[in-house]
Length: 212
Image (cartoon, rainbow, N blue to C red; front, side, top):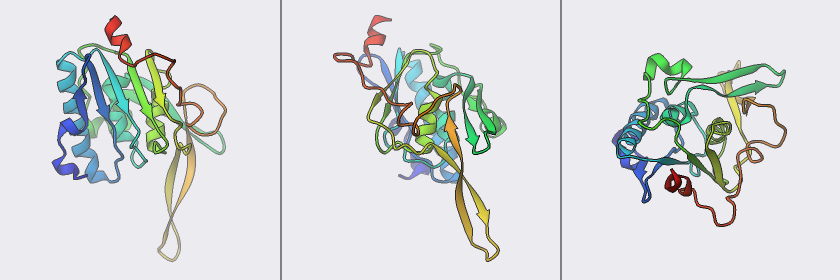
């Protein structure tokens, strides 16, 4: 996908019944981050102003890469506060904090996200077997959010973060150093066990909108 020419309707649209739909694809480079974030924020703003009463956040194609751009894209939907954390092998915990719709460490670079006309709407998160790494981190971030359900198939199960290490011969090795976790304590294998829930028989994600 050509991010510099990306259309905002490729990321966000208004579905029948009043739902907004936000797709968060993988971000593979710093040059892709800015255009994608601008397009996603514009899409969320447009659909929100059109009267979206709830949202579908689609992570089924997010195979990994940068997690911060998708978090900032979904920041107005996610809400502010601690969304999750990296946990190293020694137990050291590094929280992910959203402030004004943007990850704290990117506030100066990206600025705040625009608040929704309807704060904290109901959200349905879609996952699948291709949802991996950064995609799973975003799914984890939505886990404690009120009025949120997850639908689809189990995720890949690799909710990890990597770090590059230069070698003496000039080569670079990238190693997994931390694991993504919700803000609450859990046990299980990756995000596949904490981010997946099949919908109850006969339920539909937009029923919550119809009742509101």
